[in-house]
Amino acid sequence: MNLINKGTAYWQELDRQHHWHPFTDTQALNAKGARVITRSKGVYLWDSDGNRILDGMAGLWCVALGYGRRELVDAATSQMLELPYYNNFFQTTTVPSTELAAAIATVTPDGLDRVFFANSGSEAVDTAIRMVRTFWAVEGQPAKTWLIARKNSYHGSTIGGTSVGGQGAQRAQGGPNLPDIAHVDQPFWYGEGGDMSLEDFGLERARQIEDKILELGPDKVAAVFGEPIQGAGGVIVPPASYWPEVMRICRKYDVLLVADEVICGFGRTGNWFGAQTYGMTPDLMTMAKGLSSGYLPISAVAVGNRVADGLIAKAGEFCHGFTYSGHPAAAAVALRNIELLKSEGIVERVRSDIGPYFQEALASLADHPLVGKIDGIGLIAGISLVDSKSPKKFFAEAGKIGLICRDHCFNNGLIMRAVGARMVLAPPLVITKDEVDELVSLARKALDLTARDLGRT
Ligand SMILES: Cc1ncc(COP(=O)(O)O)c(C=O)c1O
Image 1: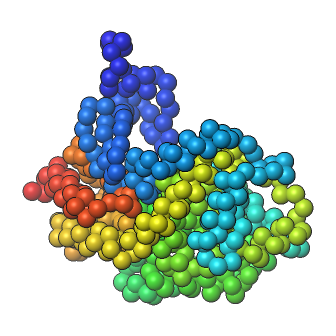
Image 2 (image 1 turned 30 degrees about the vertical axis):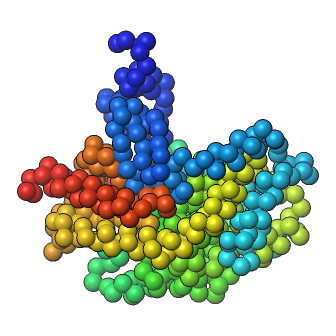
Image 3 (image 1 turned 45 degrees about the vertical axis):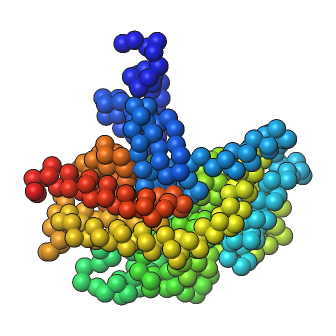
């Protein structure tokens, strides 16, 4: 192979030889070669062969303001010229990290006013785990160590995130996982609700948490961890009855609630946080992704007064943090990102304009023979592909079907992710109505091609 002329084949070969990709079967990838993404603008990406692709996933659920926002680039540039790095360890702070902490507190629910920085969603989750367990220890209840989460939830890929997460394949690698973590069933009505009404099912799934607390003993349970909507698990939108009941249970047994807002935060569901959409009043919230629109890595934990005050008053030094906690350039970008989300009214637009338009446009796919149900809110959605709609029958080889559809999307200019046989979408929050129409027509084309491959047409 001629490796002198740089181009797709050159990069694919370098990649094959040296680059180990996250969440990837490397053998399978190397057999075909990675798609090389080279540039971007708005909701579009281009690959190294010049193909334009509508990014229906905002990268990995993160590019809220879309690609190519000069304001975010300028924020990073000026900050890096002024002060490219300093840490927040040695009784020092930097202007962007301090101002960002305050800016986050302007959009979090009341009472979550203190912010601890990290660099990824996974690190934020690890931070929250350490905070809730330390909180109970300093409150004189050191036996309160158990965490309850849901099966099929995703909370990141550090050992803490993997342990609290509920994805079997991930948890099976690299264990033993952290002790004292229990998982209950997820609130996925279409997949697991049987004949129950949506509302009853939501209550039943919430009460599994109560049963688990009682089984372990309320004096042993530190916290419940949950994504308001489970994103990487396939966009599992809970019934309206679910979170209020979980709240009631947490309060009754004095168990903390950690809302993992890494995907739902910063407008995706039409409010600043998914907790506001679903009636949760969490004690802590983890956030990342949309915090900086993914332009630079940064994450945070917003901590409610009870936990923050307890830890600050009684724990002494909190022995936790990262070299890049509150990195000034990333903080400057996140600060500008929040300003733009506010000044452009983007959260409101997702709630009352583009979000409803997107959901309605997607609903037009419900007549497709492969589409069992579409769930979503704001600019996040999951589409269940089924073998038969009525009677409802799921595909035996769900993963295979999803990948067929995903590949047809990619090959026809759309990124739609597959989670088993559930196709998921979370486009940039700045997507226009014309772009939504284009997305939906590309999705229909991919569904048609999938049906054809299955011999359904
Ligand atoms: C809900 C949730 N928590 C945590 C994470 C981990 O974030 P990161 O990949 O930045 O570590 C993710 C990533 O998708 C997520 O969706």
